[in-house]
Image 1 (spheres, rainbow, N blue to C red):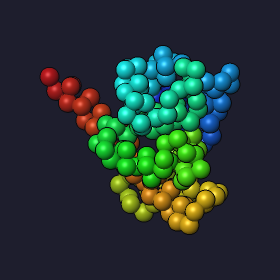
Image 2 (cartoon, rainbow, N blue to C red):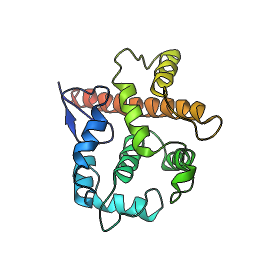
Image 3 (spheres, one colour):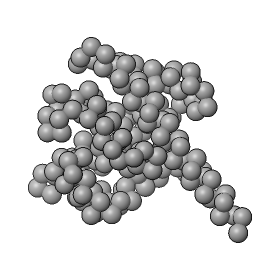
Image 4 (cartoon, rainbow, N blue to C red):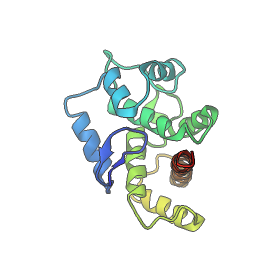
Length: 184
C-alpha cells in the first residue's frame, strides 16, 4: 500500500523516520524548483501558490525558483488547509516564523518543522484518539530541538500536536467521503 507525504502528491511505499529529509535532499540537490514543479508536487494550482506569496504567507521566489524553506511552508499550509481556516493557519505560521522576511525570529525553520512532523507520524504507535499518546509523540519529535528563546520547545510540541490533529482530521474526512461514495 502506498501513501503520500503529508501536503504533497509525492507517493511513498511507506513513510519512515528521515524519509522526508532524504526526499527534500533529492528534490533540491540542484538548487531551487520552479512554480510548475511545486504545483505538481503539491497538487495545488499555480495561481493559488502565487496568491499565497502575494498575501505574504510565503516569501517571493528568487529568480523564479522556490527554495527548500518555501516549499516546506507551502506543503505545511497545504496539509493544514483542509482542516483549519486560513486565518488559523496564518496565526500558526506567525508563531512558527514571526516576521516573514526575518529568519532570525523563527521558532523553527519550516524545513525542520516539516521533517520533525513527518518523523512523528512515521511512528506507528501513535494513537490519535489518545491525547497522551499524541503529546508523547510530539515530545519525542521535539527531542534535540535547540531553543532560541525560553519556552520555544513547549511551543514546538504544541505546534506538532496541532499539525497532527489537523492532518488526521483531514485524512478522516477523506475516508468518510470515500465510504459515502460507495453508498450510491
